[in-house]
Image (cartoon, rainbow, N blue to C red; front, side, top):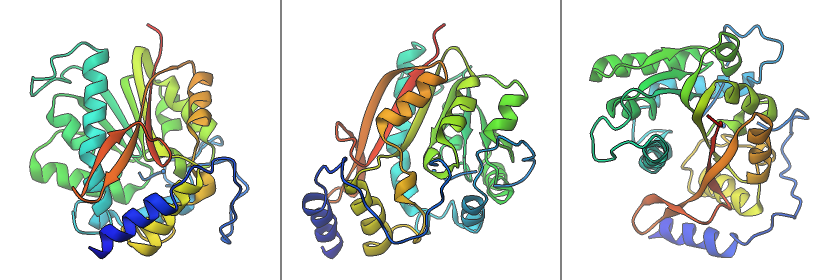
Length: 291
């Protein structure tokens, strides 16, 4: 009951719309352009235009062994996973005119899950037929992903690499996913542009991130990291959150057109996340490249 009360308090008393307000959190901020699944890390990252944030990689690499523990540090992501998986599946089925009732509804679609972490989203997408490439700059995350996939018998092509390296190699996909990643890179516009390069004509890019509002600061940082302690402190930096108009502008600059959007909110009574028209905190955008 205490948890539920705190969530409602943060939602209804701190959760008003203050998009135009400025805020200073007291923490040191990077002067680099804004940058989230959780990531990108060093590695075969010699490219001078890399958007990888080494500090972010180090932080998430330390959590590699706990990614698949539903009660561990990644517990919130486990609870968040069903709603984002459903959104991706539904967008893909609609766009590519697939039968949503089929267990292999994404069969034949090549999907890139950039910043895949240990594969929490990559695996279920592969289970419903997709040919998935899971990429993450943190080698520790990729090793954890490969180990889990082998244990459960799911085929995913995991690679310790970056979006830039994949784009430079000429990789192309029906769907490119950047889920909970853009708020963790050093240059959102460059990152999105390089991801967009890999979307085939007629393909999709889907991104999920956090809106830069005071409501998001109150819920995603103060509430989730300091009050409820759902996430380790320092997981997010408010000034790296990305507004929907900024993300859409980056997608447009990459030659894509927004065709869908949805907010995601938490229902404390049901202890689950669901889609919503409220995009003040968590949200997802879908964009397509003209055929």
